[in-house]
Image (cartoon, rainbow, N blue to C red; front, side, top):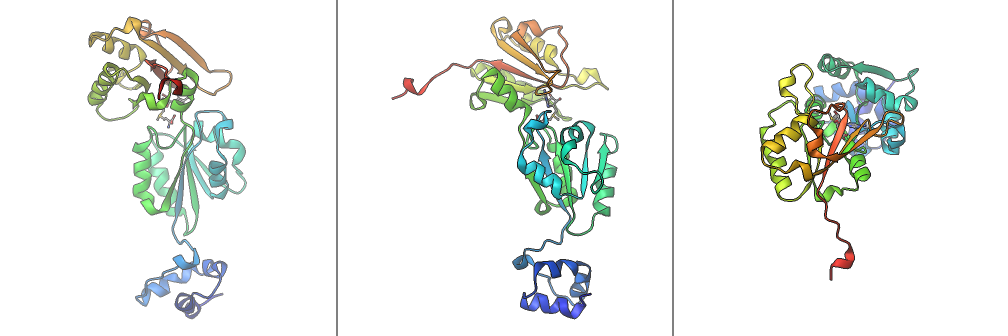
Length: 286
Ligand SMILES: C[S@@+](CC[C@H](N)C(=O)[O-])C[C@H]1O[C@@H](n2cnc3c(N)ncnc32)[C@H](O)[C@@H]1O
């Protein structure tokens, strides 16, 4: 067992190996008691509880990246919704990893409990559908608060909007991307939508399901009615609705005009693309 004197010598001379130092994490408090700042970065030793927030793709495990798989394998703790845990199931080893399924109701308690249970240098992974950087910030921001920015690594994934863009052949750079899948106010986003359409942009959007309070829904039919009422000629506007993207046997596509969405029901698990693309190849530029 390494004693406090050894620890001090490590910090003074930076001479012992990383593995020895990592055994001594518990003794670091002795160093702190002596009023010294334990600088271990030169030894590449991390004494924090670390989090990987990873995107796992929109459904099929085929869209899971190697980087995301490595993060999962490195993690002692995995916390996720049932749908995301299903996507990564083949990468998890439940014999040695502590896997917790969460719901919207208990997530706050679980994040805190696991954070408190983790010891220094433990890794935890929280998987998100699609890309973690798209329409997930309400949860990601909370995790950044709990773990601290410096201890969180965000690993991007393939988003449902990328898959929808690919299927509709609407380039993301020619589209306005909007998520209505948020808890807050969406009136400004509705205006953004109108402005982007007027500017002849295509739209890639996530609708807003709100099962507990349907007044707050902003689903496909609501969107179509909203646009018509705001003088958009929806009978000439091309639209695609994709449900359950990459879920082999469940994936569906509707292709038609926005006007036709009125009164139609689609699953909340869907992406809507309004196509106003004018194609231009490099041959049309000098
Ligand atoms: C909280 S948002 C998460 C978006 C996710 N981060 C992404 O990049 O795709 C959840 C919404 O994403 C959309 N979504 C996610 N995966 C999908 C899929 N496989 N097919 C269709 N829509 C999907 C649905 O609109 C769903 O309600």
